[in-house]
Amino acid sequence: MKPKISKSTAIFIALTLLSILTTACNRRVSNFDQTFSPNPISAVGASRNTLTYAQLTGGFESPSPVDNAALAIPLQASPPAHVFEGSLELLNESSNGNFLLLNGRPNATATIQHLPDFDFEFVQSDGHLIPTQRGLIITDHPYWNYILEPGRVWQEDSDQGFSRASFPFALVRKGHNAAVNGVMTFVFDDDEISKVWYQITQETYSSLTADIWGLLDANYQSHPVADSTQIQNAFDQELADRIPVKPIEQLAEDYPEVDLSAFGNGVTPENMTWYGFVINGVNYVGGCQTRYGLYPYCESMRAPSYSTAKSAFVSLAMMRLTQKYGITVPELLIKDYLPEAEIGFSDWSTVTFNNTLDMATGNYRSPIHMIDELRFITDPIWFGSSSDQIIAEAFLWPSSEPPGNRWVYHTSDTIILTAAMQNYLKSVEGPDSDIFQFVVDEIYKPLNMSPGGFTTLRTRDNNWQGNPYGGLGLWWIPDDLAKIGSLLIVDDGEIDGEQILHPELLAATLQQSPNDRGVDRGRNEKYNNAFWASPYSPSDGYDCEFWVTQMQGFSGILVALFPNGSIYYYASDNRDFTWDAALRETDKIIPLCQF
Image 1 (cartoon, rainbow, N blue to C red):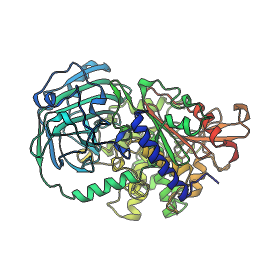
Image 2: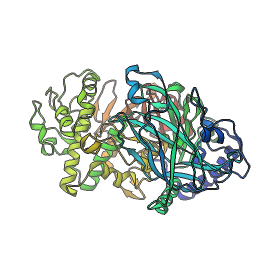
Image 3: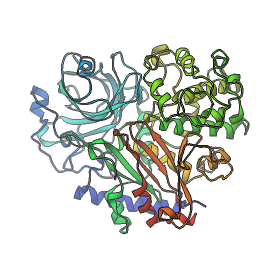
Image 4: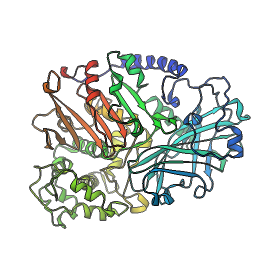
């Protein structure tokens, strides 16, 4: 049995959290996102010397971004005097703003230094500023797309009666997964708006580091927004449904025996986006450092999935399809759902869905780790081709041995499987079915994940609205990974008492089925159903043998599922993958060898 908390315990934790966070806000003990604190504002007036009313309304020059604290709701803020509802439009984005390249190719800066056109609707609810569009927003910009997240609205005495707002956003490279994170802020009343200050000071993007900032003229068109009440109610429910959060510093207070330095260990702070540890129903969150102070909206900070999408999207899709339509789904043949399999020179005649999920198709050029992968992901066809072109390219590996024997890492295999599962889903649920939307409707929404996670990178067809890639292309916040991890390692694939994921496939994925360990990838480590797995034993200092299953993503995205029902995760961009120190500390809280 894995540890689960009872309803009464959950209520106790929630009430305790409310008290702790209220105290924490007063002491300002961490960078914890005040957006979701129970009482983040008070009636005390506030004054400032950065991004003042005069600067935002009259304009000013800044040689650099400012400390992110100037874009956060201060502890001394008052409730807003005005309600923001309508359209916010930025002006002259393509010709104004500042860009400082810190790492990357200088000849690429001309296309990346300015924001895409910005004209979006927002509504306000209890001091929150909510964009009506969530998730990936395709723009006309040659390089960037947007992701918008909810922010805050408040009042400061020095703002001449205007209300002040800020909100987090991310820029996502078009056709890619990489993301850079920023914040916008402005003051407004019922009729007017100031200029809008924006700054980007953090990224999960291993080939680009840059500061982007500026002050843009703006238009505010106040008008009723369609479905405004529904949007507000949905956001209120979104906040209520989040797993209880505490700052990572609180972990040492709740469990004094734990060495806090083990969490975030092994990743340099400048490469860490955020990290977290979930245990006993609480999500302890840390990180969120930027080059200009702590990010004001830690819990809404979007990080790319990279290959964790293989696990949290494609593998979960397989488990859900199998639970819904039968145990034979993993044994379906790729060639029966993708005719392209029989056009190339490789042999897919006996390759199953499960072989492909395990990256053991037998079709590869080099068995040396990542040699084939580097060739595929650097091929120009990867960047912006149609679905048909990408699928055709994915089938070009030569046949080297029968399927099921050797693991060779191929994102192209996951692309093939995603397309095959899409066609299978259409055969059972109709021609308009979409495999990613299936996962959203059947798993992500029942898990109460945030709507910012309900979109994915798609092929270039129909203005980037083609087929989902599957092998990458989602964007996480900490709560997303906490919920997905809990579904797998704590709740045994159940949501509200209903078995959502096929229990046998899930058990094999978590290395709980000795007869199905997956494919060997060396040093007794395994790869099964798009999850990595590492063994531990008395030789590692433990009293028993057990496995740690992981989701891993290219730049340094990790979700480690510990057998005691705890989850350690982080997003980084220096390709660091380490969890041993955190594993030893979690053993002090719930012994790993009692399961």
